[in-house]
Length: 82
Ligand SMILES: [Zn+2]
Image 1 (cartoon, rainbow, N blue to C red):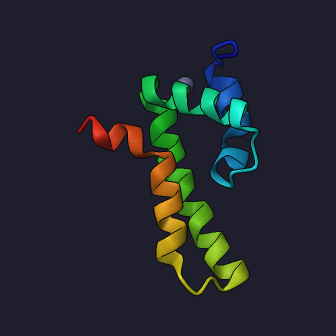
Image 2: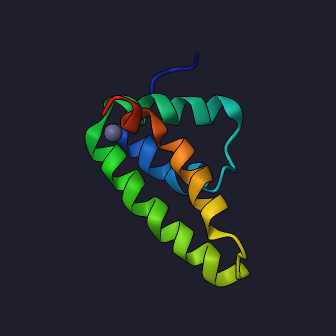
């Protein structure tokens, strides 16, 4: 595991995280941060909806449900804890 990231770094990486453009290592750091930082998790969830909307518009995604599921998986940790 790398160094824990702070909220500023999390914010900088959020877009790439949602688009799954981070390396697995950076993605794991983001995931770890979101699991323990409620404000960043809320921001990520908000941004996820926005990214989803943009992608559906831009690419005319035929199956937004698949994209939604992919993003939901990224944010899944919170849901699993209820
Ligand atoms: Zn944070």
